[in-house]
Image 1 (cartoon, rainbow, N blue to C red):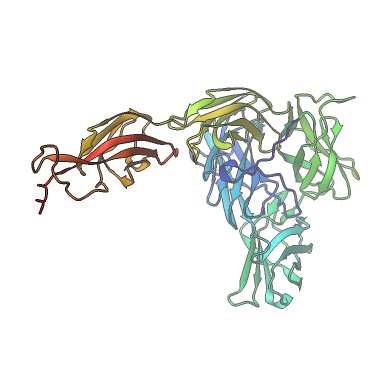
Image 2 (image 1 turned 180 degrees about the horizontal axis):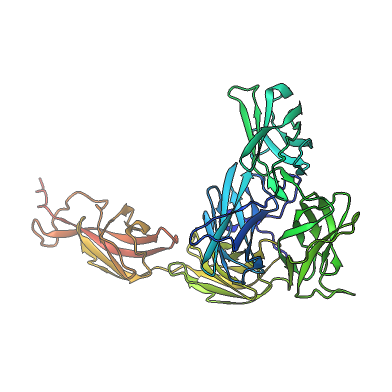
Length: 543
């Protein structure tokens, strides 16, 4: 299996999936979207890293159900954000279709800030949406920030000893530091017990009125020993729960697919997971546990093949068993095994950079969301199926007049599995000049240059007569344009020769004509192509 590391910076960056202690319980209440809101449609958003570092990306999964059952494959989920951009297209909105009832997008933030993400879906004429806050954290070398929270979950009765670990905290005392918790619109103070430059320790307040199995509680830290006070917001750090730890419940897995070879890093999201010990099964095969918290278990998926294992290319339920109680979770959340990514062919693989059109990539193991590059240049993904991807090439920045050729690369963003193969060529049109008319004239003369592959914007063409730049008249076409001849190097009227009498035009100098395509860097020169003329004057009489 080939794995390709691609740095996903907005439209082209791919990052690994993180599961640190700051990963928040991220099962918000479904909101309402456009259309006809209905409780029959549910949209819930999840992420494995609600507090990613600025300059990185995090995955967001939308789980969509209709009357409690997964929606049909191909249902469109519209993701929007008010901060950052989605890795699939570099824009603050993207549409992804569901597979097994879920759709995954990659949100990237180049700087620190809070992103309010909304996922909306319409099924059978009924709509709904879910919301999620992602807090991109500052560079550790910058201002105060929280790296992780331990634990990330506690009972609604409060009293949980919570440690917030980070850096850059203004040193002070518990008396000058305030921690506000907000749950279901109610805000209460935690009891801060110690403060250092890297940790804040506190006891959580009680919210006895909570009834949901998991309720996120954003935290606002205020350090009053600075002027103005220093404020650190943690929208996705801690949650309150009411379900007993002996009753595990699985609500989502992220990613929801991986290769048959196994070892995909998967975050199982839910509640009631016993931190004293759990087992996670993919079908009947046990996974390798990496970490456990009340609402998340991070595992490595087991291989789909081998003795006693029958998961090859199958959808299997993911279940969690609390070892102490022996209770096993629900089995309605599925994980899909698939072949490793492979590229077998590419259609429309040679294109002019001036007329780019859709490219179809054929192969296997493709699973949305994907990142695609053509000859090393990110492409815009239009559709993804298991054996076919359609992308639109982006126009490259060309530093020379040479064609650009390279491999086609595909990466499944949520698993990191990727492959490269076939090739794609960006053709850089070569300039051609077939005629220059007239070939003689004075400065200011209108000269028509004919040929092929000229840019169709005057801003993209530069024309020189010798070393002097001409001035385009109107907009060019791909086959011709008109330019005003600039002043030549000779500006003194010559003495009449060869029987000429004033003010007959007489040749003064012949220069090369050079045309440059500023976009592609292509240059073409016709030597000795234009002859300047000036009116002659009577010769000066001799002594």
